[in-house]
Image (cartoon, rainbow, N blue to C red):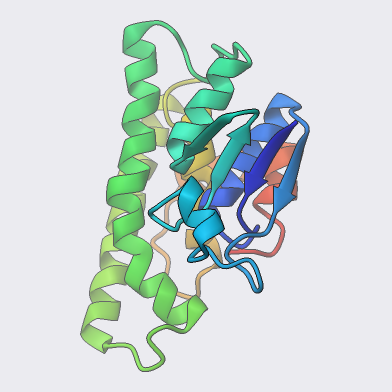
Length: 207
């Protein structure tokens, strides 16, 4: 059975949990990153020297980096609907997965940490405003994409890209900021909310 190391409050852990539910994969979860399971412990650092969750253990195979884990699981299950084999279709999915990790996540980090995680305790108002503006601007980019596809990030069908961006969209909705008016994103959120795995692992009260 698969083993997933990481606590469910982590947005990156929830990517893997959500995808496992979509794939029907059984797993055991250990909440590393919460007391007393420190990711700085020698035991964890042997598995991931970056000290970050999630880590996937599949037999003797150990893998970190949440987007890579999602690609691996979709491939393992032969789910070409979630991660296509056609080079162009797959590149489109991976483009939006990578954009979510390198662009969207960077935009929201300061605002989310200041307003939800409360670190720093006394946030810089200029940095906070800049982060909120950047976050809304990136969500406007996603809105434009969804206006074109009229469904999901990479086209008319749900893919692994939506696992990444769906969690980012949920975090945007749940963070107490002034939200841009984005009808296509709102429709996207409602569409994702029709998926039981999304309700279980994303719309579960955790931002």
